[in-house]
Amino acid sequence: MKKKFLLTFLMSFCALLTIALVFYISSFKPKSSSFCPFCDEKAINYQKYFENENIIGLCSYKPLLKGHCLIIPKRHVERLEDITDLEMQDIFHLIKKTHFSVQKILNNKSYIVIQKNGKEVGQSVSHLHFHYIPRKENGSNFAFLLRFLIYPFKTKLHSNEMQDITSLISQNL
Ligand SMILES: [Zn+2]
Image 1 (cartoon, protein in one colour):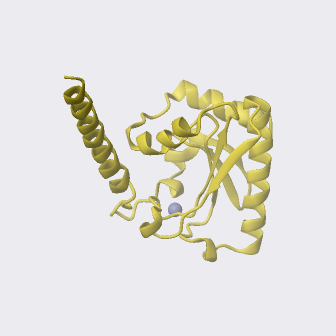
Image 2: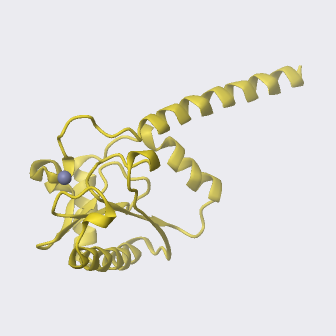
């Protein structure tokens, strides 16, 4: 009886994992239209916590974890090799400033910076962007990795929550 239950549980778990993986991999596909969300002022205005003449800092509308930010060049460029040295300098300066700001809010020392070039490696928006993802030290590794797996199922932040986090990060920069 126990064996049967275990087998059913394992089969259900594998089926769920397969479905999650299919959704995750399909989320890698870039949008087919020429619409770029990062070039659309209306789409990104409410996510903005920093802006200068070259770059913009955005809070992710679907954060993997609280404090998940995106740092992008203002110009529409697709890949890392397309940006100027000045844009690169501003981007890395903002990543550092973003970390110090988020650290004041969440007290996290650890973080990941992710940047993808090409749909084959999972670039979902064809406008160069760097993810800044903070991580608290006391969480489990499995739970942290699981967040990447369930990311496609996450819901968008409510506008009030977005306003709170953008103001907080902006104030602490
Ligand atoms: Zn763009």
